[in-house]
Length: 154
Image 1 (cartoon, rainbow, N blue to C red):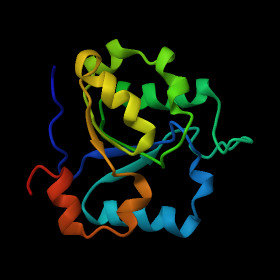
Image 2 (image 1 turned 180 degrees about the horizontal axis):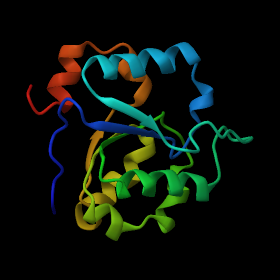
Image 3 (image 1 turned 90 degrees about the vertical axis):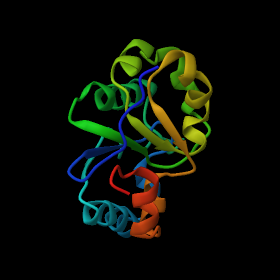
Image 4 (image 1 turned 45 degrees about the vertical axis):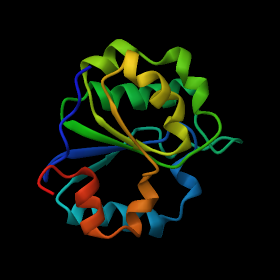
């Protein structure tokens, strides 16, 4: 299994919503987390469908898969953060393109929404899952802690 390199300043981090929508977070929280990551020198982008919010506070399976696959396929994206944990990311498992994930290893940070992927990632994909780190958490985390967790130079 190829492991992705640790992130470094200037790398692009893509925020995706494999379970719950970013719309359940406050705008202040979103901007604060984004600003913190940018202060560390990262370029932060968002999946096309992260703001879609249905009755389950999520987007369709197709939209979530599209955002995730786009993030893995984009060679500029070096790290992927999930918006927040949730109960329905397991719906994505039959639709994940494990060949794509394996061919494009990325640092993948999430919570309960990536639990299933962590369990399957060793034999199937080259991502490096880092549990317990989701996008809004970066709002409160000290820059020193973030550097230690994900930066190459730390």
